[in-house]
Structures are given as C-alpha cells and as structure tokens.
Amino acid sequence: MENVTGEGISDQIGRFQTQLQMDGRGRKHRILMVSDFFFPNFGGVESHIYYLSQCLLKLGHKVVVMTHAYGNRSGVRYVTGGLKVYYVPWKPFLMQNTLPTLFLTFPIVRTILIREKISVVHGHQAFSTLCHEALMHARTMGYKVVFTDHSLYGFADAGSIHMNKVLQFTLADVDQAICVSHTSKENTVLRSGISPEKVFMVPNAVDTAMFTPSPDRLSCDEIVIVVISRLVYRKGADLLVEVIPEVCRLFPKVRFIVGGDGPKRVRIEEMREKFSLQDRVEMLGAVPHAQVRSVLISEAFCIAILEAASCGLLTVSTRVGGVPEVLPDDMVVLAEPAPKDMVRAVRKAIDMLPGIDPQVMHLRMKKLYSWDDVAKRTEIVYDRAMQSPQTDLLERLPRYVRCGAWAGKLFCLVMIINYLLWCLLEYLQPTEGIEEVPDIRPVHARLESVDDTCETQGKGI
Image (cartoon, rainbow, N blue to C red; front, side, top):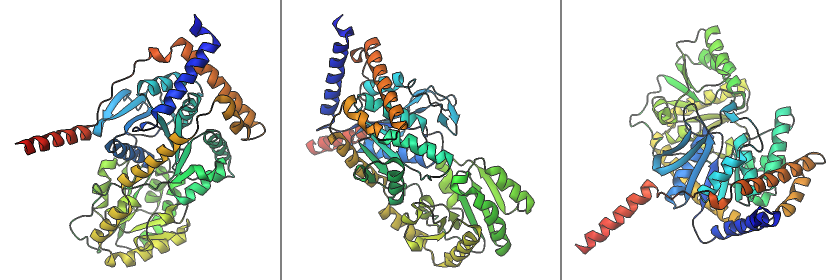
C-alpha cells in the first residue's frame, strides 16, 4: 500500500524523470514524430515528416510517427524503411485536425512514450491539435520536446490571434524549436514570445533522386503551366482565378494543368466555364506525391518550387513569407501577390525559357537541398534539447504565467490538472506495468549488416 500514497507516486515520477535525462546522453535518440498531417494525406508537412524520419533512421536513431486514423487505416503500420506509424483511433474533425480534447489523449500518448522508450518528442505544424496535446503531455512527463513550425500566420484576424495564443502556450515550455526559413523564424518568435536562442532554422529539402528532369528537351512551341498545390486561400488559389484568364488571352500557346484539391477548386472550375477554357485548363484533382514528377516532367513550365526546380523547370511564385529564400534569382521569378504582377512574372518567365538547361538546374538543386543534410542539422537540435536542464512543475509554471494576465493563469491551471491526471494514470497503471516493445532494426541497417558480414567472409576466403 506504500505506492498508493502521494509520496510514493512522487518518488516514482522523480526516478522516471531522472532515467529519461540519463537515457538521452551518450546514445542515439529515440524520437516520436507527432502531427495530424501524415500519409496517406498529401502535403508539405506530410512529406517533411516522412523524409526526415527516413534519414534519421539511416543515422541510427529510432523514429516512430504518431498521427490520427485515416479512414480504415487505424492501429500500428510499418512503412518504407521500417518506419513505425501509430494511427491512433481519432477521426479528423476539421481540415484533417482532430477535435481538441486537452486531456483525453493523455493515456494513449503516455502508453506510446513508455512502450517505445522515447527520449525526444518532435511535434509538427502549428494548427495540428494532436501535436499541441502530445507536446503538453510529454512535458508533463518530463520528456524533451522539439517543435517545428511550417507556416506563417498574421496578427490581426481572429483565427491568427487564437492560433498565436495556442502557439504561445505550447512554446512556453519547449526545449528547442525549428523553423523552415529565416522569415518563419522571425514570425514564430513574434507570435509566441519564445527566445530566439531556442529557435533553429532548418530548411525543407527535396528528394532529387525522385524529381529528375525529362531526358528529352521539351519544345517551347506549346507552353504548359503546372500548378500543384492545395487549392486553399493560404496557397493563393484565388489569384489563379484572375491570372489564368489573362495569361490565356495574352499567350495563345499557353495552357494550364492544375493539380490539387481544396475548397477553392469550385472557383477555378467556375472560372474555366465562364471564360470557355475547358480545352486550356485541365483539372487533375488530388495528385499523389509519387505521381508529381510524372506530371512535372511532361511540361516545360511550372508554378511550384523545390520539386519543379529539381525537375529542371523554371518556377514562378509570389514574393511572400520565406519564398524569396528558397531559390537563387536565376531559378525563380518572383511577383507580388497581385494578378497584374503575376501576369508580368509569367511573361518574364516565358521569355527566359529558351535559356534554361534542366540538367544544370537539377545538379544545382542536388547541391543546394538534401534531406540527409536536414536530418544532420535536426540531429544537432535534438542534442541541444537533451542538454537542457530537467525541471519540475513548480519551475515550469512561471513560464506559463508570462503568457498573459488571464491566459497565463488558465494555462497554469491546465498544466496543474494535467500533472494530477498523470499522477492518477501512474496509480491506475504504473509505468512498470506497461510492456516495452522490442526494437526492430530498420531494413537499411539490416542490409548494411549483411553487406559487412559478406565483406568479412569474402576477405576470409
């Protein structure tokens, strides 16, 4: 009966936190990636998590992904390279986000953390509900946490104000944060109040082996502009409604292929009907990531960024956020987010097309962007996170108080309740009663081991 007292639970929690801190030193990291956005959904965040996880596995780290269920895809799945994915049984509520519950996700998050012997929890995307809740629970349990912000937000509209306050709550107690551009870093620091010293800039990358130029030189007799993006307001889909008719009027040889889906797809289809552009504007709908290259290399021009440049295609984009940081000036034509300036940029890009060498552009992208480099830089962030001092609840509460006169008190109350819930879970199901799963070496690690064995045997022969 000694373990049911408050003192017994506190002793267990103290030993658990000490063990976590010791486990993070002198060994490879055991990482839990958490986000509402992962395959089979398609998007930039999903690709980022997948490729980063694969490269971290190659570096010898253990990586597990946690996301919500997608249709019938629920439970534990293994994907390429032996990457383990937990599709927890929560259904998306809005825009692939789960319904915010604050505390109901704690039992399953705790179980996964203990079963997989996790040392670092890495959350992705500011508007991922599952990400925020998992980071909150991980900090309550004493784990090191890292957060990656993939998007920019404003400061004036109601949605941004709400999201910024949620981000302030989450980043008040993270060990390290990552942003994908310098502009994103400034935006995140201003929105959340996190110390700039805790924020690293690690850019996105592209799988240059997957996105290669077409071996045949494409003709400029017909110019095809490809748009592959989520058709939402944030991605500039409304600009397409005004830009496409004007470009088609000015350039009779130009036609458009639009790949992607979203709420703005209806507006683009209405525009196509209004201006009778059915034969010049093709709507592909959602395009699986594996098929993006086949769409890109069949054309001579594209409005996309990294994948398009890796395929040797000239890129047009709006001068917003961190976009100007992505490519050199001779590989991208930038425009203000206004229809007239976008049309000007397209005209300039069409004039530049004859001088573009796709193979040279691909080789430049191969040197500029590499997921292996992103993984090594992220590894440094994990090392820094593991070096941060271990703190208890009383030391962490003042960080939330600084979040605002009323919000600070509310955040403190949430964290106190979460801590008491953890104590209850420890009493109902002690850590010692949760079975740890055996580690399964990634496929590439087993192949390397076989190669080494064969090489050794060959030398013996």
